[in-house]
Amino acid sequence: QEEALVHQLLYQNEVSTPLGRLGLAGMILNGRGVTSPRSLRVYGSYAVMCLLRGAGHYRDMNRRSVELQAGDIVLVFPELAHRYGPRGGQPAWDEFYITFDGPLFDQWREASLLQAGNPVLRPGISAVSAWSTRVQNLLESGPVTVRERARQVADFATLLGDLLRICDSVHSNNETSLTAAPLAWLGQAQQLLETDLGSDLPLSEVAAAVGLSYDTFRKGFREATGTTPAHYRALRRIDAAQALLHYTTGITNREIAETLGFADEFHFSRRFTQITGITPRAFRRQLG
Picture 1 (tube, rainbow, N blue to C red):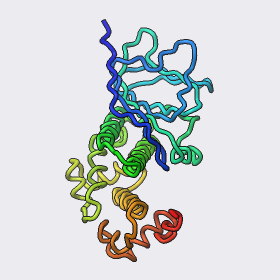
Picture 2: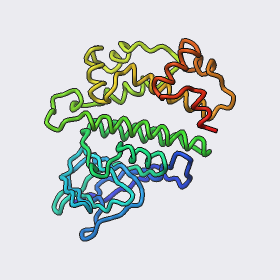
Picture 3: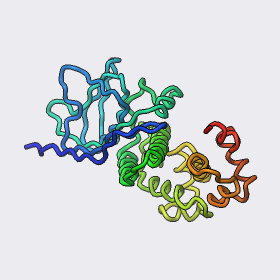
């Protein structure tokens, strides 16, 4: 006899920000997916569905038909009618989902970072499990103000970008690569690289912390994310610098450099310009 469905709502929010909004997140155990047998569903928002256990089928209005397995993700688009779930006779499945909308994600779609023509991606079960855990940890912060919610949207966008890079680098016929191997180490490494940004962090220490040699760690990280560990940490520093410029009135380049571990304000300005394409001063002007 099939176990009863359990739907655990982990997050719910109706407040939008200038960047966008995280709407709902939850865990469904022993679920049946989108269960309408005759019609397709139009959801009206973006969503990521992570299939954590079981198998099934995806279909959409463009006649796209894909078999699903644990470790797959389904990208839901606001207007794309679709249906997914276990086939008749298959056991129920477990899934984690999060919904989101807003101008930030519309821009991602315009830039083809989110593609309705490719709604099913296959990062693998270890990567999906680690990613869903990181999202749940982010949602536990419990933001109250619009500023805090905007920061949460930006942090989620970083996690979503990480997931898309993993998906881009995984090849379904290469199960022996570091990318397709269990990626528990990857989430741990990213957490280390994203924290305490103002301090020096030898990458050899990160490799040792996740149980890999430095060369294996660097190669595997690049395969999984599309960038090196050093550049990944640099990107997170610039993300933090943009947040400081956005939300901290009157902060100087020197103060940002001291906070985020740059050698001086000139080093900060040069690195900011290299990564974003504009100077910190121009970024301030864009903020109005």
